[in-house]
Image 1 (cartoon, rainbow, N blue to C red):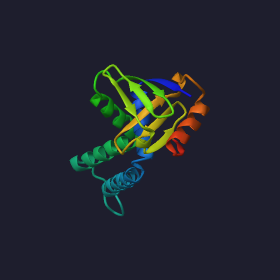
Image 2: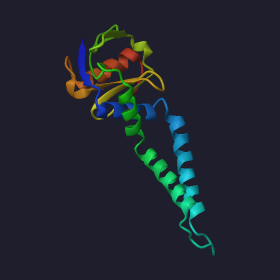
Image 3: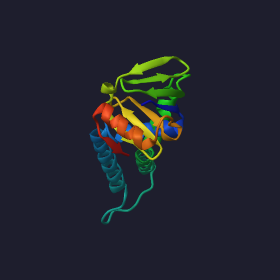
Image 4: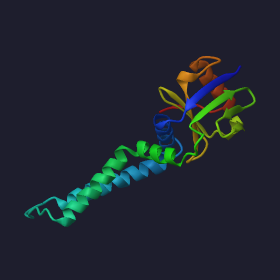
Length: 173
């Protein structure tokens, strides 16, 4: 059986890839970062709010502390979009579209820059969203495949094929 995907590595796809990396390979580190970030935000608010008989003072330090807390909060909320944006800016021109063919022995990827062959054994984790399949290779590397562009079979058939080929379970993101 042969499956084929044509994926555009646009901002949406790269953001999904960043989210999948955060929820799979970077899960522990991400959780620690979020806990630390929330603690810093709470501490910033606690130190600047008037407690007890202390009077509220809006000075330069208070404003800077709140700005830092707001930036940290914004970063925690939009972490995947920010990581996706940075990753897309670092992407080489010509890698924004990929055509990938999956066969029993491995899969073949073609872009404007060239082509590559991959073995299923290099895949560390499999993830899936409503619109994409994501292959995680390490904490910093992944590939994403648009479900809407699949040919050669159904999404369900590909899901079973890739689970059998890799021996890994699919994680829903």
